[in-house]
Length: 172
Image 1 (cartoon, helix red, strand yellow):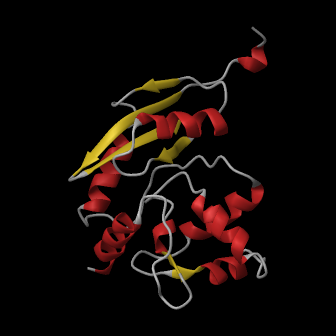
Image 2 (cartoon, rainbow, N blue to C red):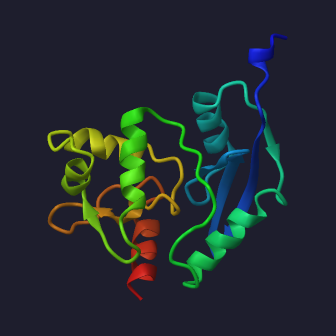
């Protein structure tokens, strides 16, 4: 095997909070994936094969404990931001959108067009929407804070029920 074919593993765990079961994954660089609620492991493996081909998935609950602890604190209302690193795996455009999402303050929302303006691509509203939809790190990269221009809740990979619960949590 050539040296360039050897990849560091992707570690994962099943995070359980109330009625949600979410698969989390992290590389050595940080959290790289938060799954949709109550989806099978296949959701993570499909994402991993597409975004991190050749990386072995290894379950390691202990290694992911710092992530699960901060996510639990957030979901309990005891934390408004995260200190753990996030490892983005996307295009330069997607990464710019995801970084813009991270700048939306806790308890506030933004629109797709505001995100497009923020990344200096005002005509790219649809592309911004697609990048937000491709966000692999739900909750900690807060795509749930993006709503339609008129304040309407729009699509969310975790489902509108999850989006609603996260926005209600942050409004308290």
